[in-house]
Length: 180
Length: 234
Image 1 (cartoon, rainbow over the protein chains, first blue to last red):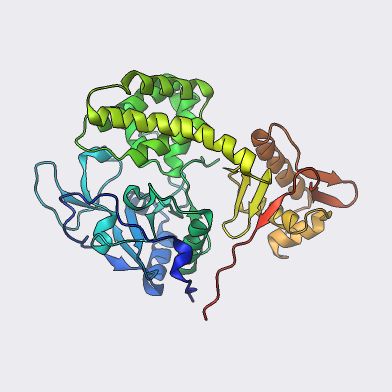
Image 2 (cartoon, each protein chain N blue to C red):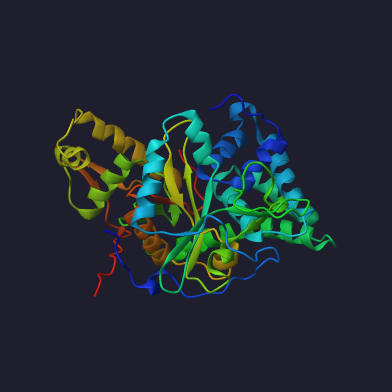
């Protein structure tokens, strides 16, 4: 059973520092993190036992935002437009296919229509080449977490929340360490 | 490691863009000359990554700062120094996004040093064990540990100042199931000591108590144990 925590321990409300012109709609994959979705994510990670699924799983990036009430909105990181301006719907962004600057994507603000959030980041599976994968979260949202950085308590609280939904092995990736 | 991967600066530059934990592991290995790479390939890939931002019509400075901090905290001083030179050559460019890109790199490279110093001064403990996040920090720097290694430091920190026997540690780690020989505890302790010593200028935190087991040192600087208790529903 997921623990319900008071939203203020996840961070002060902050508005996005920028919303790009192409970020005028929600991602097609938008969902709310709840027990059912958490179980699906847990099952997906557990099913990755071959190269086919490993490639698929490690090329997917989820972005999430916690709103004022503590609800976590989550979506696949989707493209908004191709380089020639063609609008695309429900197309995942491939992190290693192109440099980030070339992608016009639907970023964190699109998950909550540009409203204020408490904390935001990414959720992804990572692990050694063809080896077991682990869920990671981070607070890597340039729009919500750059100016006002989440505290250790905020990060710890959101980690506990994700663990309550998708299992105790979720790791918080602060970006500054390297796996051994 | 997958041998199909191409080892060229353009391909490698995308790992700076993705920058997940195991991308960073690969980048670090290449910076040390492993996997057929070396410092030059690392710097070339970094430059390709930065140039893509510099020539773009928008810049995600937050991403670039993170790369700078990671380089300062993880890579050899020579690499950090060369990255700093890249930044200093471009930082006064009259093109806004180029200036922003290299300024963000320099900010990451330098703020991390400043933050490390600040952390080492502000931190009232050299070793912090955060039980809730399963994180161990030395002077604020996260020490990557395996589950079993964390289990050992977790129990030692919960009983800090008191010796904990190998038998107790074995029970704690393996819960009575398929227990290996107690020698395994010595192996874990040795690995922990090496990881801690690397980050604490050789300082010892775990002492062997003959005939009793191991103890987490608790003398000059208190070892801090943090447990973040989730608030209960009203």
